[in-house]
Length: 332
Image (tube, rainbow, N blue to C red):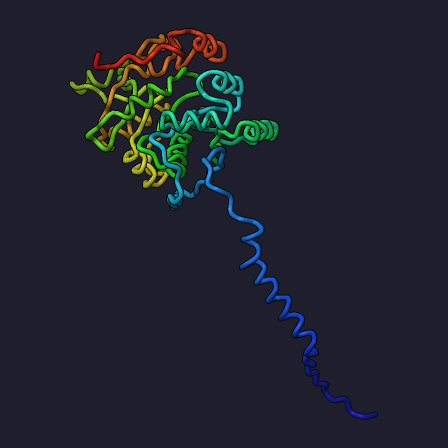
């Protein structure tokens, strides 16, 4: 029996015809994507950004600034904060001062310099998310934040909103508004268009800060009395404005750099105090009735917003003093 010997295998080169076909296919594919595809599928023309989903890094130790190229330029961006239980409120707004048609919404922007979008987070409820997606497809007037939509997390949503707004819009001011106030966009535009010498500005209807609690004595007293001076002011939560310089500072800091309080308006007030911004008190932003100078109308102090907003919004819009009264010149 002959002894076995190891066998050697040498790969046989492919026929020249096969190599030529492979090379030709690669060449034609590259030629198509580099030269023919742009002609067949040209880039989309520029359009006003509408509903978008914004993702944020949730890492507690790292932070990545969002890209700032190709931001939409406006005088101010107004983010109307809303939730999954506020479908009726959004419909009332779209039937009054917040246009429901995308072209009308763009027309309002061109007339006032203000861009408006609803701002909402996410939920694990699939039916609610599905309903939201249908509303987005119908109206296309949202910014969707990658943060859980929950009342107890409003300060986190507020920070995410300002970061998203700054990434998407190049504006002089960024406005946070609730979905239960009656707003005059034309008058808000006039307020924000005024000349200001301070680049870091915080505009709102100001109120005194929260009370100080002494756990030993079990009594409550304004902190201003304990310190012998006024406690920090902050704006009522339904609507306030931050200048671009202020928002850029918020964007630059890591998420875990902020102290969060239970109340969103107190949280923002504390941040503004730490940043030593210029406070501008505007009582027209918390008017209890429609007047010739009112900018935002809501049922202060009875409700933080309009009481029964779905009904009241429509009632106010029917009033001559709310929707049609000319703006009174402040110099008169």
